[in-house]
Image 1 (cartoon, one colour):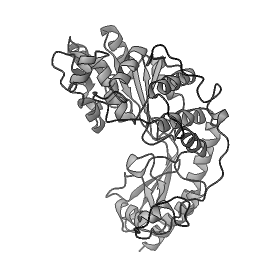
Image 2: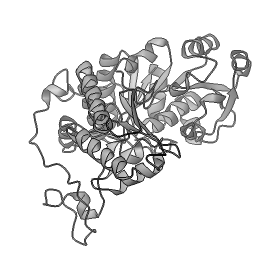
Image 3: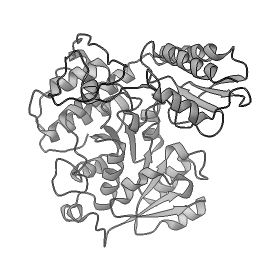
Image 4: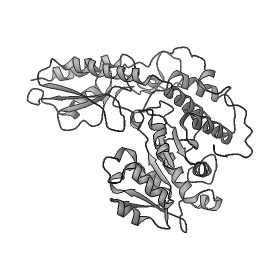
Length: 419
């Protein structure tokens, strides 16, 4: 557990060993209407009105048949998480003490040496990198992203480059691209601060996870794995720590169904302590802009407990049944083919691929996706839809009963546009 404060004197966190036991049930609220949103008015926006807060703003909600994409607001939090966040909002607390209490509980749940709740996985990338570059040195922390005189190189496999490594580069480091094991080993020098691994890209790179960790350990260089969207399965939350990675990050608002602006940073005690010092609530730091509040800290912790206690086998069967229902709805349409598949790593859950003969249904995937998006209710499918006659549907972010709506709309669109 990181020593964010010394001595730490915070009383037992939210009563008892687990947060969930202290969270009582909350009255069921009305669901958001999926009807067309009215134009926003000049009256104050308030919850509890006949019109939803989104209708008051003129924003049209959607059915998420795409997945945990940030642009589509990722996941929906369980009621227990919402209630815990509301309860947390009623009191003032020391953020340092709250982070330490949360770290202790997370370590009990996942077996990590230390943990930090961040403002998303991208924030965790920045904080973890800053920890490896500036450590706990107050002067170095204040200087970032000026890394002159510091270890300021991060090694990454060329096939692992991704748009979110901007969060790493923001610290002021230089990314050193390699492809082979020999290139990786030769790239390590006195300026090497960290080795970065993108979990999603593991099949593409020549150096796999275990070998990557072994090289880092032998050279005394911290290894950091980004597994933001890679839960489920639940085992991954502990797998990479056991494998030996020094730092691991997961998104809090995707498969865990915590607050969207939350993330988990797990790993070595000294690095987690340094990550905390390089960010909020400390003012003169590179990570100060990525503030995480008491509500997000408590909300993610409750979401994590809920997720670990979930019946994952039953949930998987529910997802499979949703896929079958949508597939059955279009099975009698001539020229239409369906296939259930599971992505290899990120968003690893049952999905449906629907293909059609363009001679019979003269549309591209983007055309079908647009008709679903523009129709009523609004439906978003995976962004993989392109010029080919195919769309892909994720079912694990659907709310109960929404798979029937998706099935009906997809059938309607394909049938209506048959020649």
